[in-house]
Length: 244
Length: 244
DNA sequence: GGGAAATATGTACTTACGACACATTAATTT
DNA sequence: AAATTAATGTGTCGTAAGTACATATTTCCC
Image (cartoon, rainbow over all chains, first blue to last red; front, top):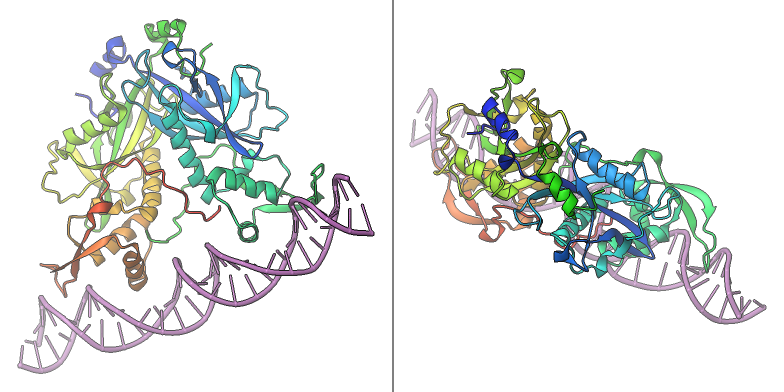
């Protein structure tokens, strides 16, 4: 009987027998961007017959010689050309029947990227951005993965300055507010919104103005460098004691 | 090239070749209890030479015919005799070198149990409860797992009524407060604490008193049934809009 | 130059948070 | 049985944050 993950010799022998370990492990990347006032994710059309016409997230099997986190970075790099992205593990999905071709356990990561970033290159033209709101069905259990990542994103956005990874370096407060509204699916009062952002003290006023907007331009801001967290093991940080 | 988790025939063939999939997957259970005014976890002494004298969490390899979640339930059932426990997935740890005997990716779950529960049976006398505060080093990367689960527990405890899984059915407000203090490692003001608990409206006043306490007994309460969440896929729930 | 459409800003009300002190009860000791 | 001890139980006030709400200003466009 196995005792913890303390694999004894007997158990190690099992590793060399396929029947005991025919579980594959993959990672799936839920890549969010913000475009045309909508929160979108990067999807690819499934090539399995079972899921014809449905889309799935980008994923791949984890290689024996790479860390789990590295696998998700690799996928991002290979598919988007971007190097320095916000990426966070969300949840691992492991029901027996989630993959029609066999037992595959997958770890989902979510990523936030600036869709206008210079380095972004979607080479594969089977890849498409889909507005989160419009997605009803997906291949595999990917709709569940999407919902789980969305819930996590909403939690994170309430507490941490991660949202800025979806925006270009310089942005206006209107853009920022519209992004919050797109993610949280609520309307926010402009004055209260600005008050709270001011209190957070996350932003630097660039003393520059928007350009090419059809009406009066707003001021541009950027995130203070100390709040830029790309990959994010969430800091354990002392609890703010609000009890419960 | 693999495309998502859409395994093509070519990729499925890889599944039948061990060299591509010699990654084992396990689950580890971080089982918390509350005893003698301390938050404790259930540990077992590692039987690997590399980790002699160190302790690890209970874990086991995931079987091909069980869900990932089921594997953690199985371990809990086998090791504690308990059936209906609070259990939640926390994080998956997948660095290459985390297990000295080979590539093992593990998904950590945390569990909250009432140490005085009638059904609790720790049969194996190699299993011991250790106060979280006293734990310095552990086998594998289990100290990291502990810290991650502790951080998650602290987050959860601030927002959701999960803490009651650590207490017996009936408890006093003092016990509840001491438990919050043990988990969050802070001192709480009794009056403010009671005020907030009252606002939450989680409790039923049983109109009973503590017994066998060395001084004035306090009133006993129990959690309202509608807040009892055993296994907890966290409800996605609409965001409370506090912006950011 | 006038109109349209956006930016920018402040106040009053309400609710939550945090610090803080004293009377009451029951068990224990004298 | 009276006094002591150690806990339970409760309320107020000042401060900070959250919410609702209206008007003046700037720039673009015609």
